[in-house]
Length: 146
Ligand code: DQA
Image (cartoon, rainbow, N blue to C red):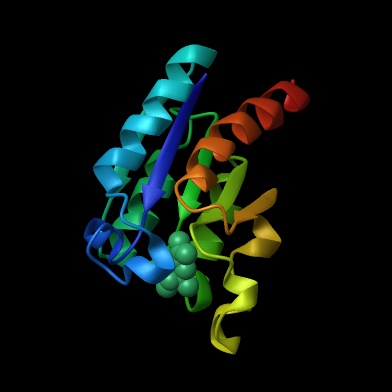
């Protein structure tokens, strides 16, 4: 089984960026935690970050036939991107939306996710553990699919 982890804009700044909201863990640390859990479950991981919306769209498109599940922290594009929503819908690969913070407990503009309706579920508010929980959720989504 192969999971594609995609991270959107500003997540490369984790660790220094608003630590009171996002914690002190860097994206590299998060990737290490994800790889550790994935190895224990015998799952393969690809872990990427970009600040560009079009690059996320391209990666989602290219994932067809190459990955079983996508885990997506679309960051701010969550709240704005019809292009990402359409890409997820177009490839038809089960996609799990994740966030470090609880977007529903923050500013009103973060309450709305344009990608949520085309994702199989949302994991929000557990900090770096949202990513680790997403490995577990991906395995369960993949098993239930077969
Ligand atoms: C975020 C939440 C988004 O609202 C925000 O724009 C981010 C990070 C999170 O992981 O909590 O950049 O996706």
